[in-house]
Image (cartoon, rainbow, N blue to C red; front, side, top):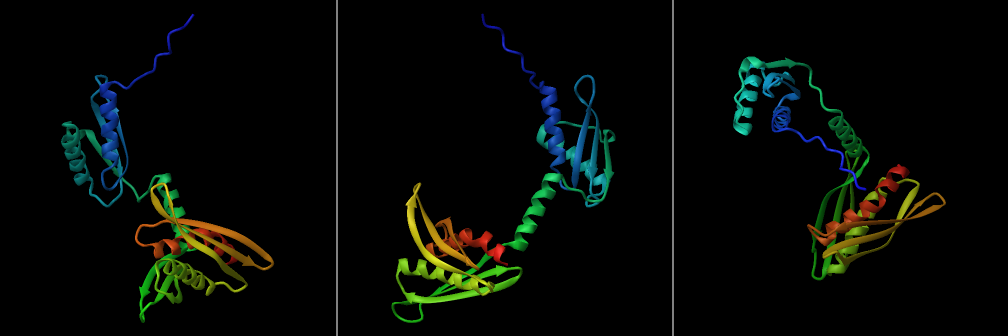
Amino acid sequence: MSGNPTPVHDESPAEWTLRRAEDLIASLSGVLSARIVASRAGGIEEIHVLTTPAVAAKQMVRNVESALMAQLGMKVDHRKISVAQTAEMKPIQALEREAVAEAASKRKLVFADLVVESPRPRRVTVKVVLKYDGVELEGIEEGVDEARSRVQLAARAAVKAMERELEEAGLVLEGVRVVDAFDRQIVLAGLHGVGGRVSQFLVGTCEVKQSAEQAAVLAVLDATNRWFLQQR
């Protein structure tokens, strides 16, 4: 014997419209939060908006009126819109993302520049510039001007740049290779990170977008960034 499924409450058109209106107001520049109080008939009774001082209260009222009319075709009496201002605040999710990004930018070794030059026939020089804690680290390698060689030189130059910041540790490039996978070209880099008496095998990858040489540098960083920071 089969029973009927438990009914699921769906939003009414009026509820959906009010939720859309709240989301729209909350997306306006300078708005920290928005709340709509509905009337018994499902219309808008009151609109409460919390904003930063970046936008004047009267201007914010006009912004809310214009946005609701333009996006949802809702005409609202400006007297129903209440604006309160406070010091700038951000949702906790945004604060967490910013904190993570700021911490990452401070602790990470990042790619800055790559220069490939041919000083003489059949020879090529690859210069890699990395940044760590605001300081530029530069590594230069020279070799045969050939596609596979340039990828190897770029990886070795990245390693040389990193080693300028390492005192009691070192890196050994095991190899770097361009492989075809998932209808894409991917650079695979393998290195040994040596710190004290401990050697750790490190692997990194990067899809080829700008050039295979740049992807080689980014693959080396992908493999070594966490290890590098531990040594620092």
